[in-house]
Amino acid sequence: MNKPVPNIIDGRHVAALIREEVRQDVHDWVNSGNRAPKLQVVLVGGNQASKVYVGAKTRACEEVGILSETLMLPDTTSEKILKEHIAKYNDDPTIDGILVQLPLPAHMTPLAVIESIDHRKDVDGFHPMNVGRLTIGQPCYRSCTPAGIMELLKYYSLSAKSKDVVVVGASNIVGSPAAIMLSRENDEGKATTTLCHKYTRDLTRHTIGADILIVAAGVPGLITGQMVKEGAVVIDVGMNRVADPSVDRGYRLVGDCDYDSVAEKASWITPVPGGVGPMTVAMLMKNTLLAAKKAVYP
Ligand code: GUN
Image 1 (tube, rainbow, N blue to C red):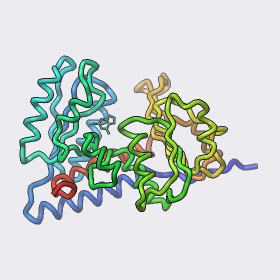
Image 2 (tube, rainbow, N blue to C red; image 1 turned 90 degrees about the vertical axis):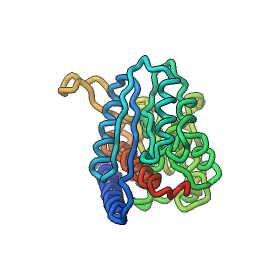
Image 3 (tube, helix red, strand yellow; image 1 turned 30 degrees about the vertical axis):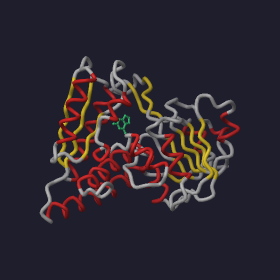
Image 4 (cartoon, helix red, strand yellow; image 1 turned 90 degrees about the horizontal axis):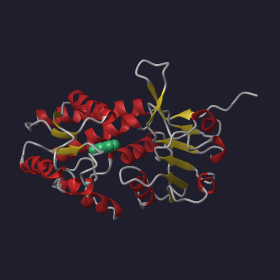
């Protein structure tokens, strides 16, 4: 018997459509006499993955007509100096969005740094003001990765309404805001949401009931086919580097799902790479344009 083949959720395709929409909107915005939107990026230290992500973000800015500048600071930078740079960007009327790439060096307190960003320029949606407003359904910047997941579900008409959604991984950046978005009473929400994490006793007991399973744990191969319900929609947010001497760069990217066995059960699945990853960058472009237009905080 042939193996069942799931439908592929193509994040590269949907992200390209969103970037094109933003490019058009930026073009119109500038043609109407406004200055081009500007994103200020801050990268502290030499984390290789962070450099790759920042490179992708600044390339996307260039593509859609958003100006960007990247401040690179050494690992040894004090939190005080970093906050001084942020304070300057907060006060600069030519800067619309500020993004401090995470993770920060261990000697810093990430929340304190995030809180020092003016929430009206927090295009990452990490500031407590934005997270709080998300929680109570008020206009806010939304964390780009979960916002990208919502766009993917919408694009493929995979409604979450009244579905059992299970989110694995409770990070502030992905899992927790994804669970909030899916629980709200609005067009993209109305799901019954379970948020699992590393203290969850019997993960399979939860995942096996999921109509929509979102996995953002950062553990390669955590979810296998036996843990997934037949016909489930599976969104794999994992971006794990595993050593692979057979490729030039020495590693390959894998998700949190054991793709082959999960694909046998899923009706829809995101590949890694090419699933959620490109959506994060596209949503950042969208948020930066909203910031320039002062559409969220007039
Ligand atoms: N590190 C991992 N993901 C992200 C993200 O979306 N934004 C920032 N600033 N840092 C990250």
